Image (cartoon, rainbow, N blue to C red; front, top):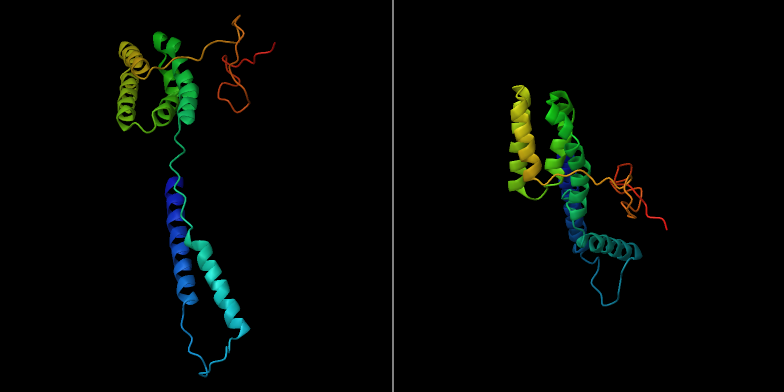
Amino acid sequence: PAKIFVSLYIYNSMKFTLFLSLFAATSAFTFVAPSRASTSLNVDRRDVLSTVATAGVAAAFAGATPAFADGAVSGATKNRARGIYGNRIAALRKAVDAGDFGAVVAEKNAFILFNSGALKGDKEKTNQAIGATNEIFAAIRSQDKSGLKKAYDNYVKAFDIAALPDLVNSESNSQGYSSDYDFRVRTKAATIYVR
């Protein structure tokens, strides 16, 4: 619904901009017959200012183009989705091995958001991921523990899902994040290197 609203808003604002620029262009170049024919310059100050103002508005909107938002797909946003939702999916390993269907169902959104975020731009992989997710939840609906384990293992292997490294309990001097906007903040991969 929000996407449709944004699309309609952009479409309507584009129509308004087009109308405004056409109106400005036509009014800027309207021909006004002189009241009397003479060789002297009989120009009213108001006419000159309105023509200049209209031409200025037309020039200002002549190069205006609408913004096209594509969802900001970049390597950073894909990596962020992989880190956040892939980590949540990887954390389900014990629940899947134990056959805890409720824990997997509780993380249903992690699968959906991983499929739409980490694989954005690759329709074939996204469709494969959706199919693999459907296999996982089909096994849950049929209460098939071995089917769930198999479908989960295939999903994790096919889309290279791994948990974030545990740097908090590590002896290594490493830095896991650099600002509070990093997706690794408040995870086990969140360490700051201090000399």
